[in-house]
Length: 72
Image (cartoon, rainbow, N blue to C red; front, side, top):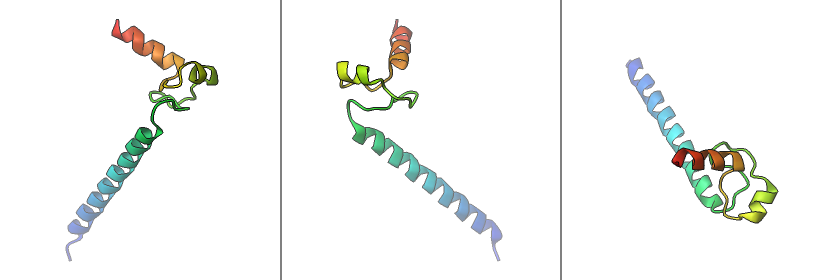
C-alpha cells in the first residue's frame, strides 16, 4: 500500500478547506458593504455615533486615525 499518497491527499484536502474558508470570509466582508458594524482592520465594533455620523465607515476611529497618520 502507498501510505504516502494518503498523507498527500489529506494535505491537499486540508489546503482546499482552508482556501474555501478564506474565500467565504472574503465574500462575507464584501457582502457587508459600506457602513458595517465591525472594523475591517481590528474586527472591533464601530461606535454607533461614528456609524450615524459616517454611515459608510468601515473602520473604528482608532484604526482610521492610525491609517490617516501613516499616510502623512
